[in-house]
Length: 137
Image (tube, rainbow, N blue to C red; front, side, top):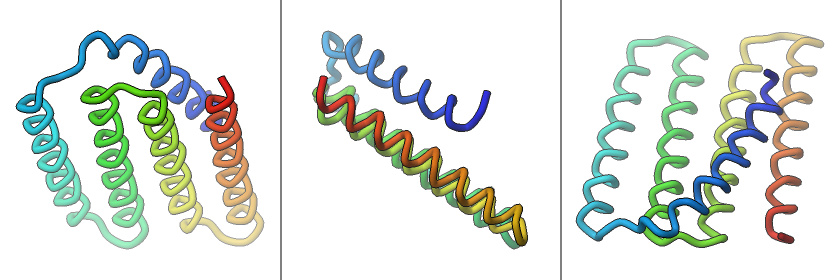
């Protein structure tokens, strides 16, 4: 499965997930506990990145931050389900995917790096187009 297909499937799954969560909104206490867990998970992931060097560390940090942002957006969708929160989840997934892909391109040189960056940008553009189409539904 290509990165593009993976991102598209994640966006579609998040929309389907959003629809099923409308009936299961969480309490304020559950929300706070989940938010604290997201922050703890991010700190733990970031600490693991500190053991890496060079671009591997940068990629790890982008992944950790992306996962945190996606988790926060998903939490907001669970807490207060809405179309705008569902779109925010999809937007964060596209953004995180792009940031990680772009950072991975830094390990390459020349034409390979240019091709990698173009692919990352194309996947991001496709994801943004899919999100824009969600708004029209």
